[in-house]
Amino acid sequence: MKLEREVIVDLLPAYFSGEASAATRALVEEYFREHPDFEQSARKAGNSLETLKTAPRGVDPEKEKLAFERARMVTETRSSFLWMAILFTLLLFLFRIQDHKIVWLFWGVNNAFPGVAFSAVALFLWLMYFYTRKRKDPLTQRAKFLGAAIFYSLFPFLFTIKDHKIVWVFQHDSNLVIILGAVALINWALFFYHWWRAKKMGS
Image 1 (tube, rainbow, N blue to C red):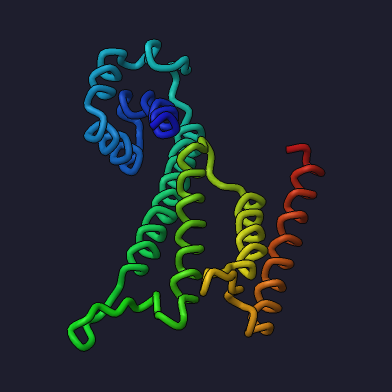
Image 2: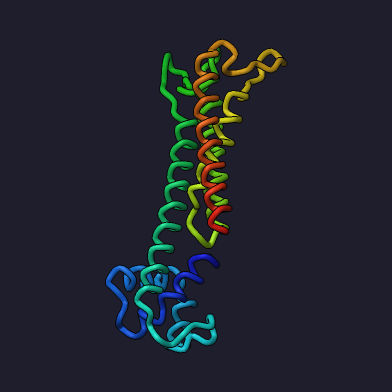
């Protein structure tokens, strides 16, 4: 993946010079195991790394630390979204056997709300996972609050189709709609606060 490769290249000078920390060596070697062709190219390039990326020959401990932390945060965030997305997707297929028939736990005949709700959460997590795959930097607080604000703003509009008609999932539970609306409002406020701070700092 382009993101990981760029981060790993930042760590190679320290790795080849023998000055990398144990955590950095483990991260680089794990990437080498997953990408043997890249490892071969990197070892041929040696410390200069000219064929991979323009990089200073000297080892900057601070740069190594920042690159490692960036790689760790990006990987952990992406992995968290992936495993949560898989979990909520698999939950949709939970069932039990009753009277020799399959009964879906989240897709009741008279109440499909759990299935719709879990589907919405799974979809959101998959979207966040694919979004983080394209990023070269960790998610900012602003991006996290924006994602949560959009999710909670759209959640009350979930619906199912019953007898060829649209049935709003929360139409009989106004209290829950109010709670979700309040959570969405809080996340929007936090998003605009962090957006204002970033703008004030010129970033």
